[in-house]
Image (cartoon, helix red, strand yellow):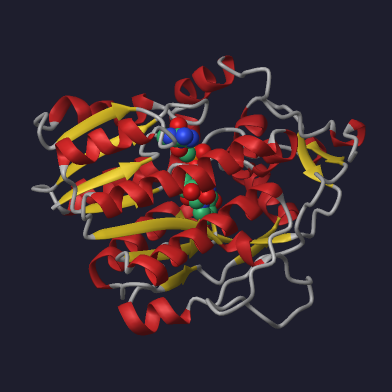
Length: 345
Ligand SMILES: NC(=O)c1ccc[n+]([C@@H]2O[C@H](COP(=O)([O-])OP(=O)(O)OC[C@H]3O[C@@H](n4cnc5c(N)ncnc54)[C@H](O)[C@@H]3O)[C@@H](O)[C@H]2O)c1
């Protein structure tokens, strides 16, 4: 099988390419990635160096560019497209919303049109739990695939719009699509601007851990390897036109995450610093993931404590990886302790 993976140089895309090639060594992957600040080609150096060129290929390019995307499809003729490419950081979306709609919505539309033109057999779109909006902390509910979309931040709204678009191409054009909406991921190769790597790398440097004041807000956490296994399962066994939630049921607050990291690294509680919430900081997300278990047989395998310890260890052993990224920090790198000065108008 030949897969076109977009955003394959980012956190989940990298892990997915590694996962897929480990389990399907005869398959071919084309990795199409713009290499924004979030893309890191060094994540896949070993694969690029050891695989025959015809089994793994990297193309640097923007999913917004129709000609480029069509050329890739015309030449490579992939069976499957897995669309990870996105602007993915909620904090950046507060500061620069437009880019999120361009990449996440219009980029997806360019890919869908090209996939349709070249008869791609499956378009699998990667989405998020955050499209459903937030749950109150004390709610007994969880979001099923039928829950209404109620996105509350520009990032979530752009992902929700893309999901609607992908579904519309199924209903209007009979496109063979599937969508997976996943909980918060953690694991190796995650950019150090995201919560768990940020707290881990800050703690390793004895820098403050900036907790939003609503530090009891919770997220559902899934190890990235479990996510990759779910995506692979949906590609193989998912029903065309269907959406699958992918969650672990394991909820942890920001407070609990910071305590876990400080404890694992034997660092003092005093590193915790409380800062104003980012605008639109959602309270809680929790998915009802029974459909993927029932219909496809997928279940998470990696216990949270085990996955977290391995992840922290990965950041300890790969300091050069994240230090290089930190040295490349651009003018748009978010200062999470500066939301007080952010004006909503
Ligand atoms: N990280 C999570 O916890 C999580 C949870 C659920 C869903 N998701 C979704 O999974 C996908 C991957 O997330 P991630 O955390 O790996 O993101 P990431 O930011 O680490 O990686 C995104 C990748 O997309 C590439 N990219 C951005 N714009 C592009 C463009 N215009 N053309 C081509 N490539 C482009 C970047 O260079 C980068 O390599 C996203 O769609 C995200 O919404 C993420």
